[in-house]
Image (cartoon, rainbow, N blue to C red):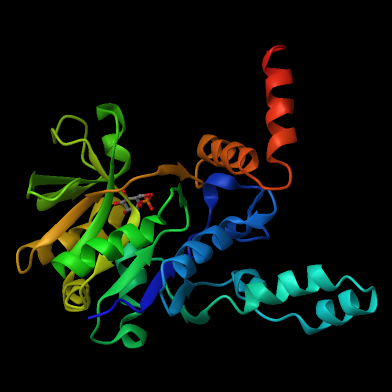
Length: 290
Ligand code: G1P
């Protein structure tokens, strides 16, 4: 069955970026010339998905407005004959069909995904976490979809992390299964205490999930940090069906972290069509003065 829908949870408070995120959602923080959430939406579009479901909360309407048609702005730009800019803005609102669902309480990532159950129904779907930006030749989401076409089971995207960082991630243990960069998941644990796993395979915010996950999430009790964890539900799913981990090709930036965010600005700035070359020149210049 084709994966047609992608869930993007955007309900989180963004406390790591306060005070910047006091009045604007963290997903609207800018990288060069677009908010971080637009990079995620563009990845979804480039991967051939038909619909996005935002899981939102209070104070997140700027995200919905960003992907909506802005009649007033459009008229002003037309009056000022800024046609190309107007078209660019309209293109954003025409990117893809978007639906929003409210997560009524901040009970965790697992609960946020469960909130989408009525909109998803009985079909496989993608999940993308807005903090994880991936620069790659083939969009990361598309790499997962390609594997899904082959295996037809749930998939998590992974990358290798140093052993002193595993406690920050959901960690997957798995065995090779003959496909390149792919592992059959045997165990997974959310944010393991140091020394409790030998695996360095960290879950990065891209998943394809079978709809059975909703019944499991329904019964998942709070785990790490007192929150309903998606990783705990995924572990339960592995007991019923096969699950795969894909070590994707590309570079991931944790835009939810100050250093990761700055690195992302640098990476997107350097490869930007309009300013990339002059930015590179500038970086070279200042590097000599550091
Ligand atoms: C979430 C997931 C975790 C995953 C991480 C990737 O954690 O729960 O399993 O490794 O995203 O970014 P969070 O970073 O929201 O605490």
